[in-house]
Length: 468
Image (cartoon, rainbow, N blue to C red; front, side, top):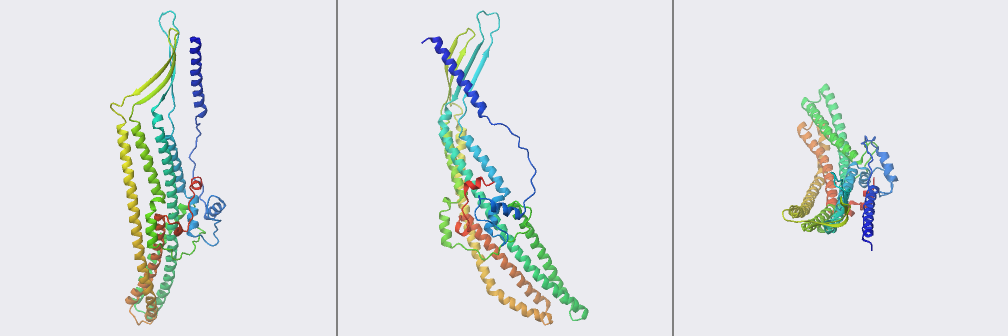
C-alpha cells in the first residue's frame, strides 16, 4: 500500500473522529431556559384541597369528603398530597439523585490542537499543525465502583424521601390529635365558665340583698377570672395547632374542617413491640437509607484505593511540521504516585465510612431508647387513667352535693372552691392523658413501622416521587 495514501486515510479517520465528537457535543448539550422565581399563589381552602385529592389517582384511599368530618388517616393523606414541606423534600431528592448520577458518568475524551506559522526568511516552510485525542484510562478502572456508589446513593435518596413522607404523615396526625383534644378542653372550659358566671351573678344579687358575704362573692369572682385566663391559654394553643396543621396541609385556614371523634387508640402489646423492634433495621426507611449510604461509602473507599495506582492517559495525534512532513503518533502519560498517591482521599473515605457506621449504630440505639421511653410513659398514663376513673365519679358526686350546701351557705367558700377546682382540673387532666396516649401510640407506630396499628397503607415510592 502506498504510504502516502495510508497517512491520508489515517488523517481522514482522525478528522472524522474529531468532527464526530464535536457534533456529538453540540447535539447533546443542554440548553439554558430562564426559570424566574414566581410569587406564591393564593393558598387553597380545605374544600378545594379535598376536591383535588379526591380526584387524584395517585393517592389511596377512596374519595375524601368533608360531610362526615376527616379522620386522622384522611388528614395524613391530604398532607402527603399537598404538603409544601414534602415538595421541598422531593426537590432535594431530585438534587441527590442528580449528584449520584453525576458520579457514575465517565469523563469525556480530550481533544487538543495547535497551529504554528513559520516566521523569518526560511525557504520551503509551511504552516504546521497538530491534532490529537486522548483519554484518561484510570477512569475505566474506578468506573464500576462509582456505578455502585451511584446506585446506592439513589437508593438512599429514595428511602430518605420515603422516611420524610412518613414523618409528615405522623406530624399531621399528631397535630390533628392536639387540635381535637384542645377543642374538647375549650368546650369543657366554656361550659364551666358558663356555670361560674351564673353563680357569680347570683352572688352579686345576693350581695345587694344582703344574703351573701363579701368572702363568697370575692371567691366566686376569683375562680371565674382564673377560668377566663385558663381558657385564653388553651385557645392560644388551639390557634397555634390550627395554623401548624394548615401550613402542613398547604392551605389558608381550617375553616370548614371537622375532625371525627377519637376514641381510645389501639395499643401495642409488649410482645408485639419487642418483635417489631427486633426487625426494625429491615423495614424502617431511615435505617435502610443509612445502610445504603454506608454501602455507597464502601464503594467510595474501593474507588479511592483503585485511584492510588498510576494513572494512564492514552492519546492519538496527527501532525504536520513546518517542513510539510506528516506524522502519526501515540501518546502515553503516566502519573507517578510518589507524593500524593491519593492518600488523602483514601483517609477521608475511610474516616467517612467509619462515621457512617457509628451514625447507624447511634440511630439504632436511639430507636430502642425512644421506644422504651414511650412504652414506660404509656404505662404511667394507664396508671393515671385508672386512678382518675376510680376516684373522679366520687369527686363529682361530692362537688354536686357541696354545690347545694354552698348555695345555702352551709359550707365555706374556700373548701368548696378547692373541691370544685380539683374536679374541673381533673377532667382536663383526663383529656390531657387521652391526648398523650394518642401521641404515644402514633409515635410508637412510626418508630416501629407498625402498619397494622397505623391503620394505614404503605407509601408507594414511585407515586410519592412523582406525586406533584
